[in-house]
Structure formats: structure tokens, C-alpha cells
Length: 473
Image (cartoon, rainbow, N blue to C red; front, side):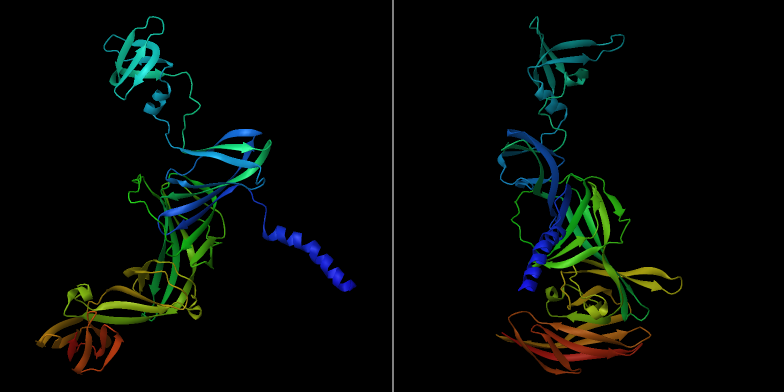
């Protein structure tokens, strides 16, 4: 009994310490979770001072492309003591026109341009109108009106900046505080204009039977705000959003490419609901109008790969996407024994091969992959074979009310110095049954709409594949 009591006392003493270690106290800073759909969730914490009663609080430096309807304000240290009464997003930023409108019915001084020996004149008075074309002033003593064209204005002197004039996009809240207090507040909101994609680099070996694969993340920030020392997370997956039919046009600006200087602490991947989340193990800064690249995965070396030659043929060009040549495909498996076995986000894979003559890498093709779970196969269509020629001919055809029978000849010419196996895929439209009546090479049923023939062609030789297919409907 004493031992049990001792254990309970120790656990009672350790639990608060364990909780403190696993749930660190919140501190000021910014976090970003970026999605594949050109938007991000911004989570920013700032220390704010509140007087007792109603306060008007301004939260500046938010993204220009913020979705105001998504803003969430939270008190982290004093929940229940601060009540949000009203929220506004102010984006009427300072410019000449907006500034002059703030001075309607106030005194201004206008320097009017002169010409030749005339040095110009100074007109002061109450500003009655500023419509973008003319200024209308009234002398406070005489009541005399002056209409001054904008082209004649040298400069305008104003007394001071109005209190409600904004130089940056700002969230403005009216809140009620139960007492005077200092609080750490978190603001969460959506913003458009931030996107990320995965880019992969694959380097083939001499025999094309293995490759080295590395992955990078490219983050593009055109949101209208910078995020300094941000905790960066990337969400991979098809997250459903309801998108407005007429999004606001994005301001295009000069983009700067910036490679991450420190890749010592990379991304940690984990499953998150039905998606995958990648968290960068260090903080990073995203400047506005910047493209940043960060290493996504540790390079996987000597991944076994299989090179395939595939020729697609059909009576309907739309089934083969108009391809007339022999495709070159590289297949490999996303498995742990291949130094992979992780969730790979969708992205572009660029494939290179080293030229033995000077040891430089030469680009040999690229393809895009979709979100790929672990233990799945990846197939990259990187280009068309130069030295393998396929020439199809329909040499006989018969059709009736609900059937079609045709005989196809495919001549395969191999101009390479080595033997190759070409997979000839006959593509069948949906809604049709089919059978191979006869063929010069054995066939396999690749799927419901693909009949595959594996044809081996020796170096510098020609092989003719001939088969008859009947389709019914």
C-alpha cells in the first residue's frame, strides 16, 4: 500500500512537469500552413495591451489577399476576460486621392506652378473637393473660391496625418476587456496568393536500372505580406474548398528566387486526418513576392528502376492522346527498402543522366506524379524513343450492326545497338467487349480496355506483330 501511494505521489509530481514539457507556453510568433490550392492559413501571436472597458485595437501587416470572413481572434492567456464586439478589415491604404479625401473641409496650402519668370503662387483655404482632376478651395476669410487643376499643382501642404489613415492592410477590432491587462493574442486567417509544390530530381545510372531521387519544396509568396521566422507547415492532399466564382486579380510583381541556406533540419512528415503534413524543423522567413526552395526529402540513392518501351495504338486517336511514337517510361516503387517508403506530394519529376564523357548531367525528360502513398508504384513518361520506330497498318476490317473485326499489323524497327522489348497496347473504348481471335505474339489483358503484346526486337532488326481483334457491343 505504501509503495502504491509512493508511486501515485511521484506521478502526481511528474504530471505537471510532463505537461509543461509537451505543451510549451505560447509565445509571440507566426506560423504558416500552406496548401496546394494557392492559399494558406496564417497563425500569428502578438502581445497586446488592453485598458478596462472598450478598446479599439489595430492589427497591422496582415496579408493584402486576406479573406476577412476567415479571421479568428483568440485570447491565449485570459480567455473569457476579453470579448470581441466588432471586427473590420481596413484596406483603403494611403495614396494621394485617399489622403486628400480625409482633408475635405479642412485647411490646406497649395503651391501652384509658375511659368517663365513667374515663380508661382500659394493658395490656402478650406478644401471642398478633390475629384482626381481638380482641387476646389475656399478662402476662410473672403469666401473666394479657387479651382486648381491637378496638372498645375506643384505640391500640397497638409497639417498632419489623419488618425484613421492606414499605410498597411489592418484588422481593426472593438473589444471589451474586463480589466486592464496584457495578453498574448492569436489571430488566424486565410490568405490567397501562397502556394507550394514539390519538385523532384532523378539521376539515372549508366544502365538505366537505378536512379538517385531527391525532392525539393518550392514556396511562392504573392500574398502581399512577409512572414519573418515563421513555423512552416505544408499540407499535401486534396482539401475541399468552396471557391468564389470571381476571385480578385493577383498583382504580379518581380519574383526573387532564394535557395534555403540551411538544410540541416528538414521536413518531418506525418499523417494528418486524410492528408499528410510536412513540418519544417526550423523557422524560415518568407518575403513577399519571393520564391523559396527548401529540401523536402533526404536523397534516396540507387533506387531500382525499370525502363519500359510502350507503344499505344487504337482505331480512335483520342484513346492514345494522339501519340504516334514509342514512349519511354521509368517505373520504380516507393518502398522503404528503396530508401523511400514515405508519402510523396504531387509534383514534377525532372530526370537527368550523367554524360560519361565529361561527367555532366544532361536532362532526359520529365513527368508529373500525383500524391503517392508509400509502397505504391510510380511511372514516369519521360519522352519518346528516337531509335525505335512503330508503324501500324489495318490490313483487314469487317463490321456489322453490333460488332467490328479488324486485323492490325504493327511493324517494329529497332535501330539501337541492343535488343529491346516493346509493349504494344491496343486501346479499346469503354462499353465494348473484345477478344483476340489470333495473334503472332501472345497477349495479356492489362486491364478491361487494354490488350498488351510484349514484342522483343533484336538490335538492328525488324519484327512484325500481327493480330485480329473482334469488338462487340
